[in-house]
Length: 419
Image 1 (cartoon, one colour):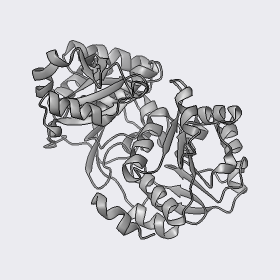
Image 2 (tube, one colour; image 1 turned 60 degrees about the horizontal axis):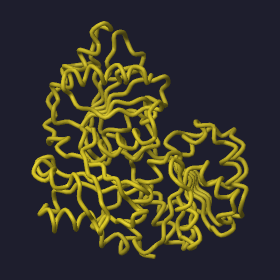
Image 3 (cartoon, one colour; image 1 turned 135 degrees about the vertical axis):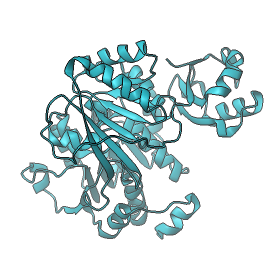
């Protein structure tokens, strides 16, 4: 397959990491590459080149499974794709798996559940891709990963990691791996700053900082979820809007925060290191270490949220004492001239796939019945029994009364702003 011809309709230009992977990859590969470097498309094109379908992909989080699924559907609209993850009814997945999909993407726990139910046979698949392999080990999925690796005589296996793996890992001694180390091929464009803060006034200084940068997309990292909850109260008191994401929230709350930040209806994400990896987030202008990372690997993953794909990024350490990490001597952080961010509104809709609604149904309703310009729609995310629609804030103000209670394809729907 000529991958350049495949990519041409999408007006897509491959990056250095993708080109190198396509040239170097064999049947059993370990790809070491930074987060956000375009690995999904690299895997996809190589699978097409070698005709290695059906394809099974294991990913550490529900959000990343959904993002991978969207990417595959975009580039391969005629290939049946099934997403398997916890937090919703399994029956929909069971029905989809009966149709012999070409691509199955799932979290390890959910895929093992399907295996026990005999929803599919591993022998049906040719290639196994384990995305964020190091994250799965960090989450103590070593035994589950071993089960997947030994469950089939795979024609090809791809492991992907954003950090170098320990060669003593038993899994790494069983296969003739080709290690493709591209961690330094495309170095992020990041400037580092340290702001000296007083611990007692730290949250006020964060508020002042966020008020100074009103256009930029910003991620604020904390080590503890309690700090996130404490900070969000201060931000709300100061009328600074932000999404909050940590392990103590319900899955639906994390889902909503992820979508709002991803779709640019929130420009600030306040989070623990749960969001440092395992999520496919868009480029951000500034990463703030409000609390220091527990180790250098976590710090690297935090920083990897900015300066991606050739874009410039900034990392700021809020430090009341020397951080112990090496970075250029601090100087005044300049204005970044970022485009206004957070100008969209994400709406929650209480109907989804099970009500037989598709993205095109929402687009048709908004454009044809509400008179919304298609360019004002920034994204539609559909789940089993609900969906999210993100539109320009000014458009929402104009139509919010009409869409509060409406019908799409004879389905009664309530659409309301997510807070």
